[in-house]
Length: 270
Length: 260
Image (cartoon, rainbow over all chains, first blue to last red):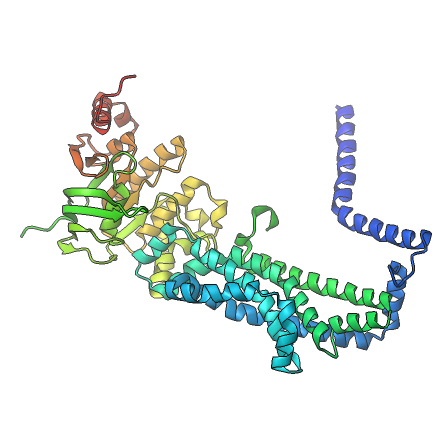
């Protein structure tokens, strides 16, 4: 009996170690990767304008004043967020229209596909010329890039509502507004949230592309400005902040979904 | 004065346009009636238009010929006298169990009052789920979900309960249990029930009368009055007459006799 008891405790200890290892694998892999990067830049003496070492990126990043960083980050975040929220505010009602009205679907869908088929990067300079300086052209570019997945996914979700749920709604004669608000939209939430997650990264891309074209602030501007002076490590530091910004937005949407619509997540993610 | 039947079909015809544009005759010359508080099963092979029949009573579709009436009034749109239990539970996963039961109030009138909640709790008690009011839908088994569906259908206190193969998605054991549950509920809350099924034992155990339908275009091939005394129990299933009637219906359903 004692023997058996001992065996179970060793097993559980081993399992504990394995579980810890499993939990920290992503972080560990990341640290190893950075380490390899650092070592290879030193061993092969790669010049910093080709591929700067992580330590160099951190050092040059700190050389830039915190207030300067804050200004650039805020500029990019503001444009990305406003464009993103605008895309949600316009995209979801438009999806309801597309799902409920055959006329709207037939008139607007082709136009939407044309917009989506146009490379936004190519249109960006034109939009900047048309809409002038300031945030407006940047917001419009961000909006255009984030808007399409939201509309398409929401429409798909609204139309995927099971026929029996619609019949339940109709049998109660609740009207179209309640059918959309209480049945179709909640049913579409998993679709909407997956589009909202994709769109967070697209929003940051949109803001950066707009800043490449014309801006005097923002992380996109900072990166293109730094590279033009061959300050590659500094440009990389800007990139790090962009990645963090993107991930933060993505995680925020994930958090909101978990908090307010846990049923829309697969069971193991609740 | 003669009271009109709860449900009356008079020479009802239903023709759909198929995907290829050709007309599909779902129902033809369908005439029958269901008295108030009667339990009638509609039994037929798949694709015989059973569900079409139910949707006609519910007012979700209009007949292409003949007339459907409820308590003497022709059906033009969905009415409050009718509660529907669907094949799948058709619950809303974003609401708790109790909010699913009160959903008809929320959906129809935009608000749920405390008396509606009290009534919903009473109904949950009736279907044996009093302790599950605040659970999420995905915490319930298939049979429990279908019970929630039944409670929801009863919320607006309809005179007529339409059930569209409500137990067909359940396993055999849960099915038998649910059939007896339904009998108990029906005894406590007498309703006119139109029960669509393809299960001969279910139909025999539950109904006062069985309408056996033919293949498409669906019409009534035979009407069978079920003789067993109520309340029906497990013994009813063992009655020799039960087996005889089941075999009789089976032979009526398949146009050719089936050899084992």
